[in-house]
Image: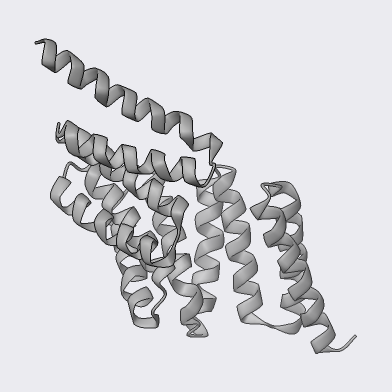
Length: 229
């Protein structure tokens, strides 16, 4: 088997791993990424090796194995940066940011989200750019920096509207609603939650409709109590 055949096989196995990952079959995904990694190493294909490390990192993150995820992502990062493979870097920076976000190391998380944002803007990757705005907005909301949170979430919303990403729009609207709720601006919170609910109905997202109803119900109940007072 020549190098091209090995690379082709590795590509196919790596795609299988990604398919399993997207379906939530994390054990199978892990096996396929590891198999593809071994094949890519035989051909010294750094991009392929990095993609497999990133895949293994994503599986580890889903399995709440934070240290293992960071180790795999770090290996991927070294190779992507060595090869100057810019297209893959925003997503990887975001994934690393999510790890630091998970352990409440918000400074490190913001550093990686901002690195991802700058590069996403440079290569005009608006999907990654929107994710960065969402994640940065989420951290600012957690830190009580409400004006910044709203600013970043509104930027994310505009990009998701532009892309026609309905589910992403609804998620961002829910996040905005939560920020306005923190600010005790019940009218604005209700407006955002209602818009999110309307989208979930439109796209028939049964899983998300109930929590959206709960958000709206909570606001309406609080407004009713305030009227009685």
